[in-house]
Every structure is written in C-alpha cells, then in structure tokens.
Length: 426
Image 1 (cartoon, rainbow, N blue to C red):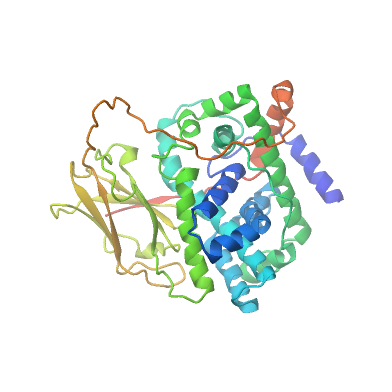
Image 2: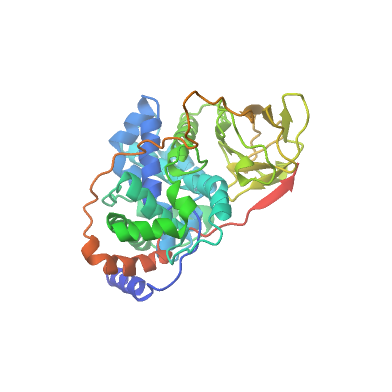
C-alpha cells in the first residue's frame, strides 16, 4: 500500500513533465476493443468476449501499465512475441471446449492483442498524416496521445475504466520466463490502477468545453479526424482490423492452419475509387496489415510489388513500423492516374517466428469517383462512431483548473515509447 501511495504522490509531484508523442490513448484503446467485439461475426468468439468483458477490458489496459510505473513490462506486453507466449501457455493448460477460467485468459489475451495492434495502425497509418498536417501546431504537454484521446471522448463519450481483473502472478511469471524481465505482481496491479486514473482524467477533460476545444486544437488535424470514416488507422477504422486479428488468434487456439487469413485489412479498402495518385502527398500512402509480425529481412521488392492495370510496375518506398504488422507503400513517382493498382505480396515473406506467408494480393483504385448530381460536399458524413454516455467523472467547467493540472501528468501514464521506423526502396 505504501508503494502505491508513493507512486501516486510521485505522479502528482511530476505533473509538469512533458509527454512523448505517439500511439493511442487508453480511452481510444478501450473504444477500439468495444467496437472490435461488436464487429465480430456472431459465434463462439463474440460470445466468449461478451461473457468475459472484464478480463477483455483489463487486458486492453494492461500493456500501458508498465509505462505508468516506468517498468519495462509495458514494452514487452505490447508485442506479439510475449502475447504468443501467453497463447501457448493457454494451450498448455486448457483445451476446447473452454472452461470459464480459460475464457478469462483468452479474453485478457485478446485485450492485449487489441492494444498492440491498434497502436501499430495508429502510429503507422494515422499519425504520419498528422505529422504532415499538424506540423507547426501548438501542441500540448500531454502530447498527441492525450490530446487525441480527449478529442475522441468528446466525440463518442467516455468508456468507463473497468474494475480491476488481473492475472498479475501469471503475467509476472511469463515476463520472467519468456523475456527475462523481473517485475513484482503488486507493481503490475499498481500500473493498471494508474492507467484507470488517467482515463478518469481524460473523461473529465472531455466534459469541459474549454479543455475539449484546447486539446482538440493542439493537434487540429489529428483531433478532428479521430472518427472520420475515411482516415486510415484511426480508432473506428482500426476496430475491424482488430476483429480480424482476434479471429486469427482464435484459429490458432483451435489448432487451425496458421495464416489462413494473412491480410487483416488495407487502407484504402478494395472498391472505392479516388485514392490520391500524387507522389508528394502523404495521403497517397497505401497501408496493409498482416496477421503476424513480419521478418523485416524478407521485406523488399522481391516480396512486394505494385502494378497498374496496364501491367506497368510502379516504384514505391516501403515504410515499416515497430511490431511489423503494418507496412506502408508510398509511391516515389506517383501512382498511375485513373488506374486500378494491384499489390502482390509473397512468396518469400516470412513472419518473425519463421512461418511463410501464403502469397496474396489486393487492389486500390486512383480513378476519381463519379460526381453525383447535386452533390456539393467534399467531405464524408462521419456519422456516429459510438453512443455518447455519461462517464460519471467529477470534472466539469467549475474545476477545469484541477483537471488541467492533472492532465499535465499524463506523460507518465499510458504513453508507449516509440520505436524507430524505416523505409526500403522497391
């Protein structure tokens, strides 16, 4: 108990520390998980996750708990190698039909997987656009993570932090056996508590009109496009990718052929026309999401190619992020105008753990969409990304100063360290 009090006091004393930039905030993570669960087809997996909603939500919060207490378990928990070790542990201890206890662990695993995948899509597809369009913006001490989290809650409501459910003893054991990292179970619980605290603060800020406007304006493009259906990598567009990833993990839990669904999602989706062709536009970047992290040594022109509908090879740069599930293709001389392009992947592309991806392809179209009679709009209707609901936070316009001070400390809570990105010519 004393360590928890000390950490909370330390947090409050360090409120002026700046936040790093990158990744989703914890409210955004929880919304992605909720939307992904709703996007699943009816069946056993959706039923299991609905039945074990508490472990699912706590699993979603779990990776950022390590950052909240400045412990390396947070970095380890984000990524597929550790999550695969947990999946293997589940298979070693349980078998279908899953018991209630097994279901809790599966739900916790799916929450962790949602967190890691949504960070990758956000950082690799959404934030590169923010880097361009928000250049020179005022920024804020809570960084884009916190500011865009406030903007999302302002748009769709607060996802209430769940009551705590944690297999902290098992997580500590797996951290040591899998990664050689020692962490005390009580420290894991403390980290999760602080993540929940940060979510309450974000919800309180979003309920205050002045703070909501301030944090949305700090990164105007990123803040205003959090629920835009046309923007790659934002939370609503990440949810279907997470749902597809869960189905791949579910197949692994049932011993089915690995990588049966190698492509989890793509930006842009197949079908819609009008993808930008200009080589100098960040919006021309095409991104796709793989079912497993890739071995970067197998990524290159030998394994990925783009051709227009005339059969011409189109050169591009490959942008790869940490985690290696998400690859971006940015044309070096522009995509061909008014043309369907086919991206072919493999053979020869391998996963980080030595599996071969089956060859697959997908398409995108730079043909301008037809203009409908009477249509004068140049933006899509965003619609409702979620049902706003009262978060029950104490913050309001009358205590905006207290909320603002607390927000300054969110640089210590839930902000993942950014990994370097790289690019390869193809």
